[in-house]
Structure formats: C-alpha cells, structure tokens
Length: 451
Image (cartoon, rainbow, N blue to C red):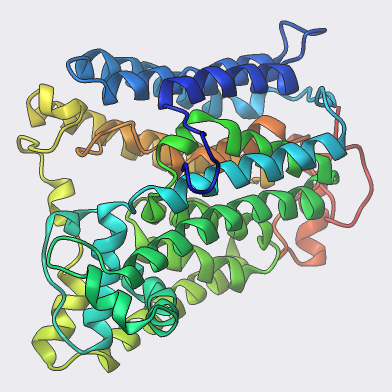
C-alpha cells in the first residue's frame, strides 16, 4: 500500500484491534448494557479472533473449534430472532454525517487493500475460464474448480472484456504466464471485488430506505460491514461476496417477485448455498407469488444455459461448461483433504449434521406459516449459517456468505407490516383476521416500525 498511502501498513491483528475500538465506540450501547444490540456486537466481534487463530500456523484446531462455537451461537440467535418482539429504536453513538464519513473512509481503506494486494486465486481462475468460454474452448479444471458454479464465469466475462480493451497490449504480454495472472486479469479481479462490496453497501442502504423506514440504519449496517475484521480478511474473495450482494438486492426487491427470483437464481449459479434458500422463499410468496418466483428462477437458468450453448464449440464443451463445474463431492461423506474443521475428524460425522440441517431447513420453510420480511431475513440467515457446519471445505470460515443478512437482523425494526405482495384482497382480509398476525397490513399502511 506504500505507493498509495505512504508509510501505511496494518497487519490483520492490528486491524482487529483498531476496528474493535471503532465498532465499540460507534455501535455499543453504553446506556443499555443488557441490550440485544450489545449481544449481537459481541457475537460479531467474536468471529475475528477465531479467523486469526485459523490463519496462525499451528493453532488451526483451536481456531476451528472456536469458530464452530461462535457460528453455533449465531445460529441460535437467528433461530430465536422472531421471539424478540420488542425492538426499540437504538441510535448509534454518531450522527448521520459522521456515519457517512466513516463509511466512505472505511470503504476507501478496504479498497486500497484490494488494489495493492494480489487478487485471490479463485478470482483469477474464474477469469481464465471466462476467457476460455468467450473463445469457445473447454474450461480448464484446477484447484478452484470446487469453489464457484458455472454462473460465475458469465459474470466475469464483462469486466474481463473491458479490462482487455483498456490494458495496453505491451503490458499484457509482459506479465502473463501460466502461473502468474496477466495485467488484464488483475484489473478485472480487482474491479469485480470493488463492485461486489459496493453492491452490498448500496443494497443495505436501499433496504433501509425502502423497507426499514430509516436511511441511517442502512449507513450503520454498511459501516459495520466495512469495519468488521472478517470483511477485511476476505476482501478479495469475489465468489463469496457477489452471491451475498445478489441476496441483499433480492431482499430489496422482494415486492418485485420476478426480479427477486432472477437475483436469487443468478446467486445459485455462482455458489451452491443459495439453492437451500429457494424452498423458504417459495413458501414466503405462496400461491401466485411462488409461481412467478419459480418462473424467474427457471428463466435465469435458461439464460445461463443458453449462454453456454452459444459459447460452446461442441456438445462436449457445452456439457463441460454446464455441469462440469458443479462440485458433486460436497455431498460425499468421505475424508476431507483440504484444510478445515472436518479434516480433523472422520467424514461420517458430517452425516448427522447434514440430516439435522435438512430437518432445520424443512422446519424453517413451513413455520411460521405466514411469514413477514423479518421472518424471511432470520430464516435465510439461519439456513446459510447452518450450511457452515457440514460444508467440508474450511467449514465456518465463509462468514461473508451470511454477514450482510445477519446485519439486517441486528438493525431491523419490527416488520409485521412487510408481507408478501401477492395476496388478493380476500386473502389479505383473512390474513389480517388471523390471531397470530393481527398486525399484518399492506406495505403502504402506516404503523410503528420500532416497538
């Protein structure tokens, strides 16, 4: 970073200490020590030390156990979110102008880290497969093969094409090799990381503006997202940030069922975990809304498959691009080779964890029967967090999968009036008369957000 910020260097432990002080100063409620907000902050800050232990040589076992315990506490917190009916307004210890300045400054420092550090291997691998797809070649198989889905290559084609047009040909040839990324690949990877984090930030602010009734809540969520050490540690992992950004915008557009379905469908094409959210969202919309939502997912799948069809040289290349990048070994309960929690134990121990996850997924899908936006947020976060326990590769470390949704739960007010948009007038009256949802109304009706 020295050529951008002269003399600036912050190690990962130092970033944890500095961000810890900033987060406590801005968000901790000193006047209400036993508040839910303070408990949530403690849980969020507890993730960073475990990640540091995992990265430290010789302490991975302790770090993974710590991470699993913290993730389990977060899962319990999301499962019991609907029981916290009293959600008083808790302003931050900084006004809106100060939050805006801190958010911009934190974003600038994090993006400086993106611009000065080498891009992640998974991002470079996806860019190379995107380049091969544009040329009609069969994508290569490598170590990053298991991380991203086929939709990731489609997303990476546009920034790759722009960077290839911008980077001079002389610089391109001077840096490219079989192992080292070319200059255009570096530019595209960094651009994708910046745009993915920017999409998360703007999505949180838009959600607060349109559905939470207070833009300052969006600024608070975005600022905390940037300050948390777990964001800085994995700031360049585009394949982890981008699906979370699409899910955030699916929440923003939840009243536009088709748009929300397209966003979730695209997220499913990038990584596997959004697939487990589909039954929950279908149950949330119910009846006509569920049909439109499912049609949107199908349309996105057809669009992705059609893209592979037009960029494939032959049938073998088409099948390889469509199905060859899916990592089916995730559901095989054998010994796990990559570093992670489950490489310490036999793979058979994952079987009851996975069965418990499916039982939880079924329960959250059918209960409560009539869900509002708050229930959808909490259940979605619980499902993504639950997937961390049986995922074989570095289980528990993929915090960016669920962090933006978890921040929505931390800051959200009561959302009893934010209901699915596809209820007919007669059905809406029946819902309002139900004893367990007496406060449900239309999204435009007035009522207290904070109680």
